[in-house]
Length: 121
Image (spheres, one colour):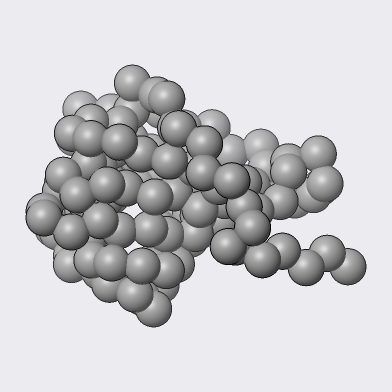
């Protein structure tokens, strides 16, 4: 068993061409080498930042832990806030983040072998 205190996790800058609009930080909850099944981390979006349209080869679960943000597909945008849980099916073009005036953080859970591809939705 492993217990992790989120307040103890360092925030590392998340450098990727997938992010736009501001600073994004990542907190690794479980090191990928410690899990046979999942990638499990927190993504912290500063106000005005988000990711670009992309898709994953596995389902993605987002659990909003702080703030208010948006999860969007080509067909709809949904406002999300602390406590909301989002299931994004494998292959669905989407983006998420904090494009407005407030920051947003979420836990992201995907299968370990999942691949992410930027798209033009």
